[in-house]
Structures are given as C-alpha cells and as structure tokens.
Image 1 (cartoon, one colour):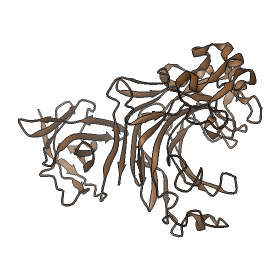
Image 2 (cartoon, rainbow, N blue to C red):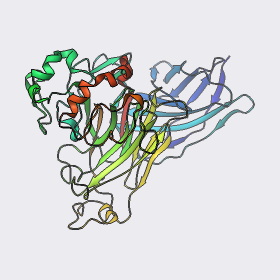
Image 3 (cartoon, helix red, strand yellow):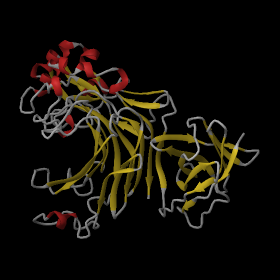
Image 4 (cartoon, rainbow, N blue to C red):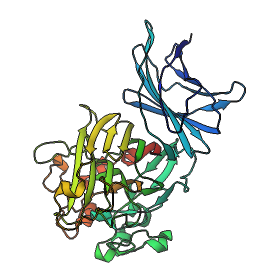
Length: 458
C-alpha cells in the first residue's frame, strides 16, 4: 500500500519568474521506500538530480523522464523510512545541458496521524551548476578533472609523489577512489635507495617543479616512499556552493583534504596572498592526541581559511575550527556530506548539515582586520578580498610531512611517531620505521572514497 504525500516546498529562484508548474509528488510504500514524481518543465530540461538525507544518511540519484506521462521519476530503496522520520531533499532542475539550474528544496515528516508535516526551506540564491560528477562511468572524466603530477611535497614536506597511476586513482562501484600505495610495490625497494624518479619520463608530465618536484634521486634519500593522487577541477567558482559526498580514509599518517585555491598565481599573487579555503582536512590515525590529550586523528575533521601578505609567520593568517565525530565513531566509518557555502558576506563549512566553521567577512576588510602594515595588496578588490575571485576544487590524499601537521609533541599511543620533523631524512625514517604504522593500513580503508561532487556558482 502506498502512502500518497503532496509536499509543500519553497523555491530557490535562480532565473527570473521561474515557478515550477507543480511541486513534487512523493510516495512512500509499506517498506518505507521512496518514489519521486516530478512534472516536466518547458525550456529544455535535460537532467534532474535529487539529493536527499535522513539524519546523516545521504543519497543522490538521477531522475528519468517518462515521455508518456511527461513526468520525471526516481525511486530508491536506500531508505526504510518510519513514522516521524524527516526526509530532507533538494531537486536540481538542470536546463540547457547543465548551464542553468533551478533548485527546489523541501523537507517532509512522515506521520500516520497527520499524513505529513511540511517544512519549507526558503532560499534566495541565483545558481548555476558548473560541475557535477557522480562517477557513474568506468574511468575518470578528464573534461572535469586533471592530475597533479609532482613530488614537491605540497609545501609541507609530505612523503608522497602524486601521479596518474591507475592503482592510485580509479572508479569502482560508482565511487571515485584516491588511494595511497607503496612506491616499492611499483618499482621495488632498491628504487627508493638507488633509483631515479623522473616524472616527465615516467608520466609525460610534471605539474609542480618546486622542491625538486620533477626529478629526485634515491641515492640522496629523496624518492617518496608513497604514491598517491591529487585532482584539480577544471571548473572554478567565485562564490557558490560545493557538496562532496565522501568517506574519508583511516590509517596512521594519512592526510585527506578537500580544498579550494585560485588557479595559477591567483588574483593577488602566490600563496597565501590569494587565499585558500579548506573544506575538510583530517588525520587517519586512530590514537593520535595532542599534548592536552585531545583527539587529533580520524575522530576529528577541521575546516580552515588561509590568507596573508606573505608566507612567513608574521604575514600568514588562518582561521579554522574542528568537529568531533559522535562518541564511539570516526569520520571514516561512513559517508558524510561535506559542504561549503561561500558568499561575499560569509564562508561556512558543514558536515551533514552541521557547522564546522562559520566565518563572517570582516566589515573593515581582511587587511585592516589583521592589522597588516604597509600597502594593502587587496585594495583593488572587494571587502572580502582575497576571497573575491575564482577558486578551483582540489581533492587529494597526502601522507606524512615534516612541517608540523603531525606534531612531534603529540602522542600516537604505543606505535609512536616514526620520524622527527627536524630530521634531514624524515621521509626515509618514516619508511624505514614502517613497522610502526603499516599494520594500520588495511586494504581500501586507506582510500578516500567519493560518491559525488557538485560545484554551484551563485
């Protein structure tokens, strides 16, 4: 038996006078499975994506058009909804091959006594989807993404080389995997000590030559013992929303991140002059704690913004906040929705709809807010400069590092930390002492798994 529910919602108006002819019809069967029926709209409607969640359980699906009934249809058995469960959803009407988007947002509460409790969500933003990828193909779509190919260490002395190997970046079961692997498994142990890592010769590319990023010698203890993946979006946004449905990795010294940078030099110059937005960073350790006994591993995620007049400590500023996973869980246990909402007035990062960092633009501008001396490098920008220009999305899995992200003063339980940041051979110490961490790397648990990525320009 179907329980028929007519849902009242509010419209996100993203083009003048666009009003759907009717709201969606939603049906819940006796098993709690959900079906959406949505009337077609004129104007070249070419696709429809439905994002929904109940509590922290997110699901994304594409509706299919029924030409006979002139309706779009989507059904899922992902949920077994019960009375009083609240289903939140967003229906993205995509017109003109994805160049324009209209969004319908709503929530309903299923209740046998009242039939339904509508909970509209008023939103007023103009929007256009510039990137959507649900990784439904067999290979990565290079019209949307490109690889970092470099051993530069990401400015943090990290222990991986980013490369386009299929063992590090692949699609399986409708998910994108970014997985760190051992360099010795690909090239042999002796390669780390006597080999030559020539990225252009191996992969016909090197995207970042800084810090010997294109060419390294094993005889100098400079070949990274880890191979991993880093992807850049070809699309960029200036203000907008980013939504990433992902399951982060676990394993000691693994460092996953979703973040945004301006392409190239940036509007105001090299980092941190043109800003950085970190949607999510984490550490894969299960037992890592700081000097105060606070968890710093995979039970914690952080969101941060960076900016400044130079990269020295007196010229670099950052503002961030953290969020702990519910007691007895880690962020690597399941998929979560990580989001960025970025306007002239604020930058907000959330996980599963809960705030991690909520930052308002200083009304006096960032230069005055930080009390920087000298000429304002952002004077020609807006009040929110440097966060007033195009930023692209980056997805990556780093490992280790010798510049403080994994502090020497922290406690990693019985395994300890296998290197000192101050050591000139920190990277090889990490590998030599792998008996301290290798047992925490288990199969695909070390991979960052992503079900979908969406970038929307406001």
